[in-house]
Image (cartoon, rainbow, N blue to C red; front, top):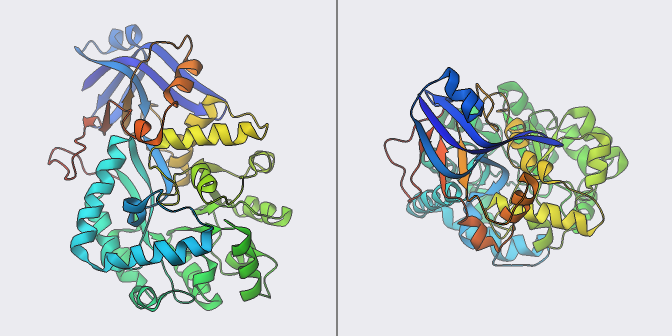
Length: 419
């Protein structure tokens, strides 16, 4: 057992959190056993505490990030479709090189840990080997999928893509069903037949699904042209059987009322990517409608359109973007959407995402600060700064109760995480 002593901030839901100015966090075998006021915890567990100078938060979850775009994050700012064709697809083609993929994967996971991100859902390039390399190099709890592109894309990426469903079973087995997601890049890169085959395979194998939906108006118009029989963009995925409680849809900026009702009925999750939406000028997520329809969503960086993998930066943009439009976002909701909501979107809500007893002891230590007079004021102060400053703000990251190294190669002491 290890008893940590520090200030503690633990998300409960979108409206509330627990705060302990002098808190105790008891960890046994990588799992939280007790949480509360230090005096109360030590009364029942009289262990010598490990004192940490700062505030402990749960580790962050990023449910929509392209690890193969990490090296070019924030470099380009065009509209979505030309940005993909001009910059991103040539970059992803480089991941046919396994040595480059290995080096970049180590850098990506080290950077995530430095920023306090301990779990998430990542998009790989079309190359099966790159996805396997990312899975082997992962540090934390990650679900990965190789993007599937069978049409309307460069020939080399189409050639590298796994063809559904023949080659999917081998790859899903190699990575493991708990860590693999069926990942059509978006409707424009797949035929109706391919999408239906992916939907059937995901249902048969019980796999997560991740893709993009309605990120830009140009994309929506092009989907309507290529799929004239569909009611709308969402219907393309629905007819293919790709929508369900294990589906995470990136962006969802330009949806009709019918589409919102469909997502609610199917139990889908939305990955809300405020920093990416700003960078590509894609539009503002309809937060009011998501709340009104009670469609579940969590925050995500969407690197590389997003300029930073820091979830502190994502939370900053989440609050400022919506509040500029007159929509209130409290600190409690920002923290919840970047932690426990993300874990739930991944199907990990019972094992991670908060510091409740029974959860995996994944947490990050933040500086205490000097000006704040309340937990809310401290949290607002925590989110101040540039992307680079926020990426380096955490003082340390722990996975399953072990402090982890943030150099590019993991240390042997870092535990393998159960699902």
